[in-house]
Length: 362
Image (cartoon, rainbow, N blue to C red; front, side, top):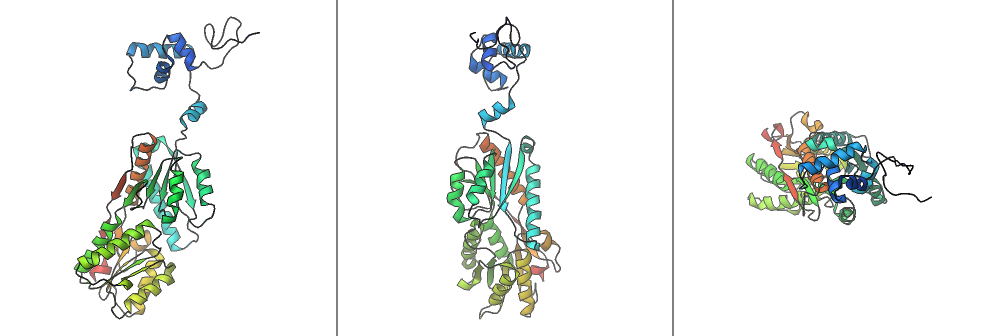
C-alpha cells in the first residue's frame, strides 16, 4: 500500500488514509492557499511581517480548524534556544571572610539580574570555576552547550584565547574586564575609581601614596588600577617610586607584610589604597604594629565595599562598586546579543562612588 504524504480530508486524516497526529506548517499553508513562508511567519506570531490582516486571520483560522500546535522540542532544535543564561565566577576555596563576602557579592549580582524586565524570559545558571583547573575549557564547554549565552566575571589575560574560542559557539559578555577589547564587556570604571580615591587622599593631606592589589596583573582590573595609579601620581604633584605598588600577594599575612614594607620604608607612605576583607585586616594590623593612628598618621581607602568593611569600627572609607547595576547591564547586553540586536563590540563602563568614613577623616 502506498503511503500518502500530508494530511488528507478533514481533520488529521480521512478517507482511509494514514492518520497524522500533528498537522505540519506545509499542510496549513496548502489549506489556507498561501506559501510555506507566509504560514510559518503567521504561525510564529511574527508581527513584523507585512501581511494583510485578512490573510493572517485566514491562516490562523485554518490552524485552529486542524488543531495545529507548535512542537516545543522542535522549536528549540530549530532555534537552538534554551532560554538559559550562565554566569561564571571564581569559586572560593575556603570558608574565610573573603569567601563569604564573595558569595554575598555574587548574590548581589544575581539580584541585579533578577531586577531586569528581561529576566522573566530566561533562567540563570551559576558556573563557579577554578581558574587554575587544567580542564577549565572542558568544564565551561560542557556548561555552555545548553545555554543561550554566558556572563563571565573577572577573566584573566591567560583566559583570552579560551574565551575567544568559546565566543564562536555562544554569545559572551565579560564583567570586570576593562581593557579586554575583543569581546563585549560591562565593567566598573576602575581607572576613574582609583583616580578619585587618590585625589581624596591628597586632599586629606597625604604626601606619598601606596597601592596594594591582592592578585597579580593577570587580572584586567588590576592592570587598569596600576596604570591609573601610575598616571595620577605625577598629576597630583607627587614623585613616583617603584615600591609604591605591591601586587600578587595572598591573604592577611601577605597584605600585612606588604603594608609593613611600605609603612616602614625610608620614604614611608601616609595614604593607602588597599583590597577588602582579610587583606584589609592585614593592612590594619601593619598600621597598628607600626605605632601609627588610622585616619591621622595614615589614611586608607578600601576597594570595594563589602558587608565586612561596611560594619568595621572605626569606619573604613571605601570605593563602592555597583555590583547589581553591572550585572543587570551585562545581562541585558547579553540578551540583546542573543536576540540579534548587537552588531559589533560594545563596552559599557559603570562609574563607582566613594563613601568616606573615619579612615580618611581622622
